[in-house]
Image 1 (cartoon, rainbow, N blue to C red):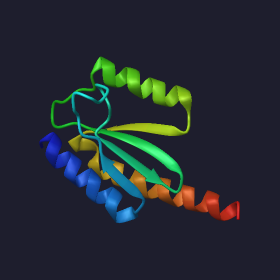
Image 2: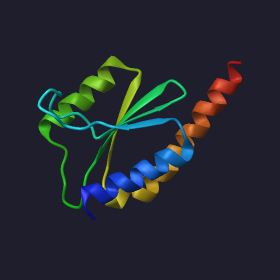
Image 3: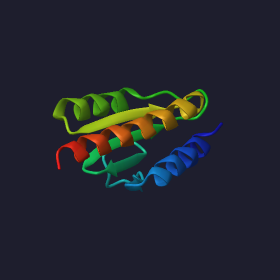
Amino acid sequence: MTEAAVLKRVRKVLDDVGGFVVKIHGSPMQRRGMPDLLWVYRGRAIFIETKGDGGTVSKLQSKIAAKLAYIGGARYWAVWPKDLEAFERVVRATVEAINDEQDRTR
């Protein structure tokens, strides 16, 4: 499966559960190594890197993921074709947990 096909399926899952999804397009004016997608759901930001069969996370992408983890408030997920079913379960569980947390604080 190509990275584009993985990206399409990931985006569909995110669109289905709601929130805001944006594709981060690479350009000469953008920082290299940025993840493919940004998903924001009820104030939580999750950056998502998609990979096709045989794709790997680069050293620069790993460094950016570590920085996002260090600063807090954002998460970084990498998704390969073999992970798509688990990804959907994790997204739905994440949405449920965020909803439950925000409902408790009202």
